[in-house]
Image (cartoon, rainbow, N blue to C red; front, top):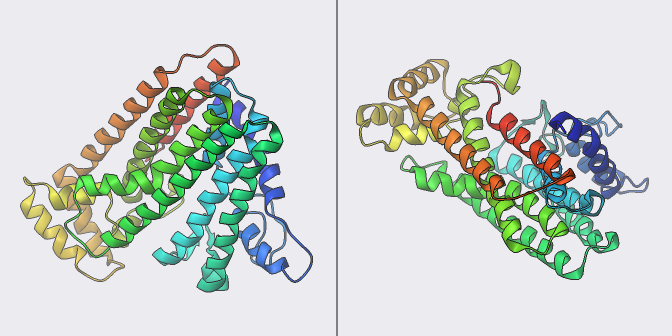
Length: 349
């Protein structure tokens, strides 16, 4: 089963139940739920229905594939997949406000259209709807013990997401962020929810905690590789493939891995001093500062360093997947997971 075939089979299941999870009442709350549906990609700025523009739904597909790879029934796991995706989108709504981001997926963000207060409230609504979705696992015949384990896993992930966002915001005004602090941040902010999506998929299918741990570590390592690759694309990426202008992360002075590497590398003191001087200037940086920063990063070998680290986590992800023996349909699902890993880390620069 190819990854494209897996998406063609599983995405309609996810999308249908996602839309059912976010209601569109015709009373005085139509605007409130309309804002959520706008953020999810199902409505335009006038709240009129549009063809879905909600992204790749990576986390719910990962959840369902891991459930299947563990020998489970994906129909039972759909509520968990929906819950993970709604938690992810709740975090995006809040992140956009906290980061001052005006655009996401090529459209104006929720707070940019309706203001921060309304966007916070809509994000909170998505969070509650996520838990309502997760509670439907019992209706699909999932045992109480497995429901409780899934609940605990998602609770933990939500707290780690908040911790990661705290780190991200705290690092904005600092130039002494080292690699370990950076990894602690992305492990929470990016890798945790991917790992939990995989873990919950297995928890729905199996009572084997070791198996759930293997899939958790697979997706956590994949999430770290994915974020580092995203850091690379945010500096050197091709706009046609990434959907955003090259060097956007430099313009906004983000503490991505290539920048952290230069700022804290003991053998790059001159480059670190030059880069620190630029990063002390107000954002967004001017074109000349961006070009100078690119030259500093290239001279220090920052891109190669980041690429090697991303590849290392990718290898770790596959090693965790190798710990899980499968057969039949489960084996096909695992092959799709391998293809997903390759596609995420091998995105075009």
